[in-house]
Image 1 (tube, helix red, strand yellow):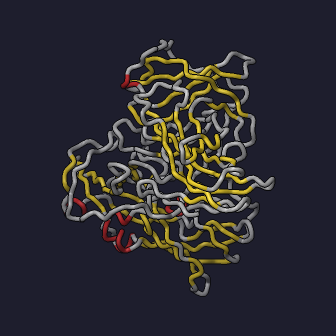
Image 2 (cartoon, one colour):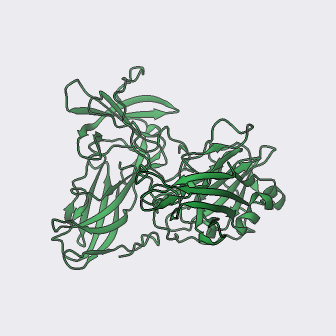
Image 3 (tube, helix red, strand yellow):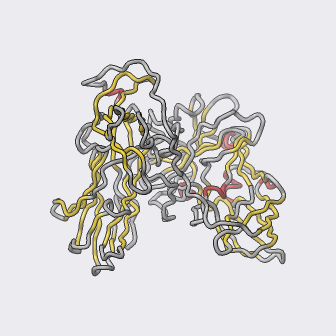
Amino acid sequence: MQFTRLYPRRSGLAVAGLAAAMIIALGVSPASATGSTRPVTAGLAAAGPTVKLEATSPSVTVGTSFQGYVIMDPGIWVASLGSALQLNVQRPSYTQPVTITQIIHTPGGRVTARPLPAGLLDGWNGLRGFIRMTVRDHDGNVVASPMLTFCPNTFDPQRASPQSPAATPYPQQCGADPFPKSMVWGMAQGWATDPAEDYPPSPLGPGPSMRLPLGKYQVTETVSAPYVRLFHMSARDTSKTVEVTVVQGHGCCAPAAGGRDHPRGQALPSLPRVSDLVNPPKAALPDLVPLPSWGISTSHTKSGRDLLNFGATVWSGGSSPLDVEGFRSPGSPVMKAYQYFWRNGHVIGRARAGTMEFDTRHGHHHWHFEQFARFALLDAANTLAVRSHKQGFCLGPSDPVDLLAPHAMWQPPAIGTTGQCGVAATLWVREMLPAGWGDTYFQSVAGQSFDVTGVPNGTYYIQVIANPLHVLHETTTSNDISVRKVILSGAKGHRQVNVPAWHGIDPEPR
């Protein structure tokens, strides 16, 4: 997995509006509070969470970087007091519209569901146009005014009250690809999120970037009127202003999000002896599903080759996480891989499942499970046109796909590959993909993207095969293949690709 915080194009998905009068009782994830789910009334809606803006300081200082640009984060937070702000976003199938529902936890312990207009959604990225950030210079002139999509999930949530719980159950990110099935967005009671942190990043890092001269500015964040009404916000809580001083910074660019942290060694696990299982029970198995390819584009190399680049996500459903662990004898360049089977939170057995090898190439330097997926470009007759050389994977959860599924985990122990894939001296590696989460790779480097230099123009299909050698046990292998139609055109050195929508989802421009 190539783990970088991904921000897709801000093209809206095909979602339909939801009648405000229609109230639908929905099931609640086991991670949320228990209680009956009932239709919500106006009174109960008003008794929901108290949403407000809070500024950490009346003034902050930020530094410029890279040709005078600055990441503008004034330290203004969106807090949820009184109760949690929880939004369930889902679609019954890929042919049906995405809906958004507020889950309200009432003081009596009940859980109620309030459907919200689907037009509030900025795809799977969060709530569209939630906040207007206005930047004024010392003369009061507006020099920048970006609208901020608000993702309640963040890598850096903060407690906003001493009465808040010690931890939050909600995931650490909203969507990154166009094909999730369901997601949970939320802030725990008494917790807060900085909306500027989740703004699509520039090369400087995440957050709104703008080119500003050195000096003092007034930065105001204001919640848009529809959300003020929707969440019954008090007027005094809807807008905050901070004085920001821009000073000369140093260096160029912020480190990429999701950087890997490779420990210098890992101890072997202290676990009871695990039995080998030939026929593990279905209740202890994952279900690997490749999503249709996305983020598809063409590029041209200095050596004169035309490449077709694409993103591929394989996610894990079923009743159990995918747990692949590698062990080796000292001095061996290869690890024997085993699949471990979990039921009710305990390992019940294991089975041999292929191999792991250490990848020494730039950007990797970790252990790859060699039999996870395979990619091919098929022609219109469904025969092989080009095969990707990408086969090995460092497995880890990078993209939430179906967090409202019965066995989904809202907060994996680690997002991405942080520390999971080892170093050259490692004896043991555990690579896990929890239920409800996907592993995304972008094939955009030599040997992984499709070389289409000599491929004629026409219609093709990007094929993604999960578990191609059937070395992993799954609940079913009937859904292990996905295809995405692409149309190649243009002359050599200027190849283009047109990607038709898949069930009305994610049409990609030339």
